[in-house]
Length: 112
Image (cartoon, rainbow, N blue to C red; front, side):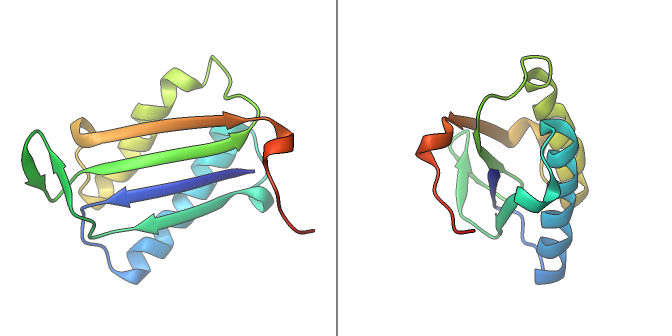
């Protein structure tokens, strides 16, 4: 289970948000070696974000929370891979921050 949340100042339609959520799901499954069935993605667009002391229209914050650790070989590749995908939606890679939260299995809850 990764739970991934993207907050962006880019203005996206609901169709674009849905497409982006699926793209993030597919990319995350490949990069994090997790099955699609356990990946949750949330998108919030048109969020007010300031960057560098100015309100930005193409900034984003991507948060990845998951059980266990992200592979040390994969971690350095994540910013560029996500930035490349997000650039199609007008997000500037220089205004993209990523945050990783790795937690033990016992710290997650869900229904089966």
